[in-house]
Length: 67
Image 1 (cartoon, helix red, strand yellow):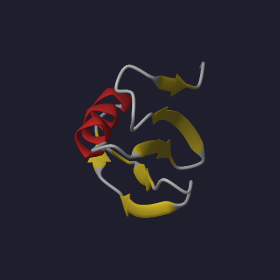
Image 2 (cartoon, rainbow, N blue to C red):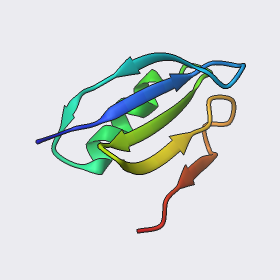
Image 3 (cartoon, rainbow, N blue to C red):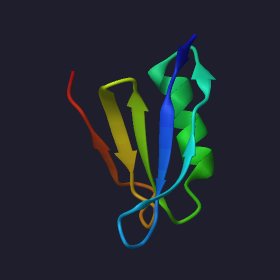
């Protein structure tokens, strides 16, 4: 398991909360972030590696880093 950082981004673009779950994969971290979304963007990191940003306003919009 690896530690991930899920940063909740407020309307002004600032981090308003951070969660650091242990996850077995990027996919599990993605699902945990999706559950936190609630109209806020969520930035997903594993250490220094950026995974994705989930848009808080449009659940279909996801920015992904191409590996």
